[in-house]
Amino acid sequence: MSRDPVARGARQSRTGISDLWQAWWQHHRTSASDSLGRLADTPLQTLMTALVVAIALALPATLLLALENLRQLGDRWDSKPQMTVFLRKQVQAAAIEGFQAQLRQMVGVSSVEYISPERALREFQAQSGFSEAIAALDVNPLPPAVVVTPTAEAIAPERFEQLRQQIAASPLVDDISVDMEWVRRLNAIMTFGRQLVLGFAALLGIGVLFVIGNTIRLEIESRREEIVVIKLVGGTNGFVRRPFLYTGFWYGVIGGLLACLLVSVGVASLAEAVRQLAASYQSTFELQGLGLTGCALLIICCVTLGLLGAWLTVGRHLSAIEPR
Amino acid sequence: MIEFHNVSKRYPNGYEALAGVTFDVGEGEMVFLTGHSGAGKSTLMKLIMLIERPSQGQVVVGGHNLNRLRSSQIPFHRRQVGVVFQNHQLLFDRSVFDNVALPLQIAGYPHREIGRRVRAALDKVGLLDHERANPITLSGGEQQRVGIARAVVNKPPVLLADEPTGNLDPDLAADIMRLFSEFNQVGVTVLIASHDWSLIRSVGARVLTLEHGQLIHDGALV
Image 1 (spheres, one colour):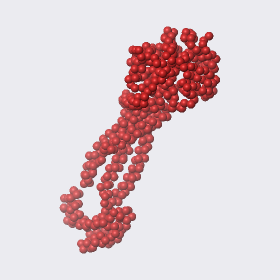
Image 2: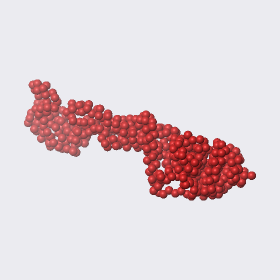
Image 3: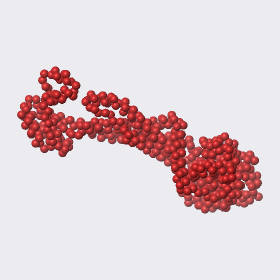
Image 4: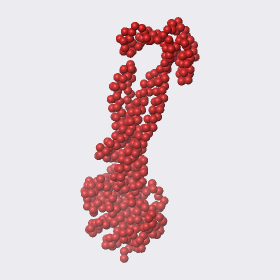
């Protein structure tokens, strides 16, 4: 070799911007693949850490998913709140006609629909599955009823309650059933539940930060010598930090994929049972899974936590490792 | 190239490693630093590499006053100073080639340039046929030469060596010293900490002698 490393003496060696950019990109690529390679070298330990990440995020994700499903279930009835006004059985047809007219004139009533005892029995027979038992009845046990749909303004709880009391005042009325009350309660419970789950998720997220941080702290310890040498020959903090950030990144990616898998397996195993339960209520409700957006969000959360955990640890421990 | 102006270094425990040291090593000069262990040689080297900062006084390397360098600039300063360590500081989880390539990767050299320069440096220290080996399989002298190749691969204007011949037999030590002389002849400023008197005498360069942190001799060996 005729190329002597110092043949041109102390002349400063220069590197152009594009070379630096290429080298920077190159180091990102090698850091990413080296970090992944190191994780693959200790598959069991990697899997354990990734599983902790996965479980910690799959748990709140599952709860949020359950709430989302409940909300959709509620939405099916939420669209038009109504009240069913049951009339006394002995009320005559003419009185019912008059009562309907009276209702239509009330402020806050949008529409009124009369359901005769016969029609109610027919519908009940068709939907409930007790058709034979009902056919055996001598008399129709069902009372006449009027379904009242309030106007948009009268949906508000106070106005709705006012309307209910106004209707209940009539001597013809036996009972009023407000179907929507439980939907409203459900919504309130779900808002509370959602906040609870988010708080829970935040705590678990902090736990994940510590787990990733601790794993990376151990890796930093085991590579202490390398860090010292890199700093001695002029490596910047960014150069030293990069492989560890990628380690956190990969834990996030693997943990996120595992979390998606866990949630999806859970949903799949419950889907059939839920479908059967819904069918027994004449509902075609089906359990909603994470979907692509959900999976993407879950993975993004895991990756963010992984990177953040790595960043916090590396920042704290690298400054402590200096050549002596 | 390396200037010390009234430099003192007192450690937090009160130990004074250097006291009012002043000297100037010109560009392209080769200088030996001697003294008993504990005389302050290592501290002086550490001040040049910015592993330590002086308690008092100024250290100027290549025209830059090191007191004025922020911590974020330290890596770029270290790329201008090649260092050969007594304990080699090689990484045993990678090949000889990758050890020597490290400073170039850090400085952001393009891939093909790295290969060319690493082989040139290994050729210079006579280890070209060992580039694939793990440094742990090499002898002490060979490991030292890998360390030298790594120190010069980036063509730094200043080369420091801390007891580079400490654990080597006289023949190998002479070989290593010849290498340093060759680097010096092509313009590199070389500062070698050593107490191998016979070797220093054979080279016949300027000698700085430290005793209890003070510079007691500066000039040719008498």
